Image (cartoon, rainbow, N blue to C red):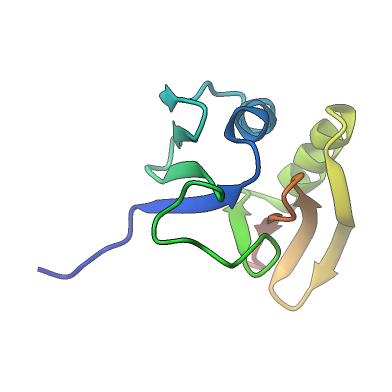
Length: 123
């Protein structure tokens, strides 16, 4: 058996607040939610957990910004459309749509400093 990651967990300050943010971002309700944890099952199969950094065991010292949650868009036009939709939702944008070596991309950020990159690689 080859171990294959299927879940990403972000340590957050307030899981209910973070769950509301990601529900708005993804247009999906969490499948599980409590005061200390929330979980989303995304259409591509990834499970996203939001765990209170105050209750995670063993204690976590890392905070947001050390990595990115990357979302591959089908086309570069979709990158721009997602950016516009997220701006309309009031999502904080760190980097507007731009061309980089790996394709068209933009970067958003959540309240805990977790970076969310939307990208479309060149053909």
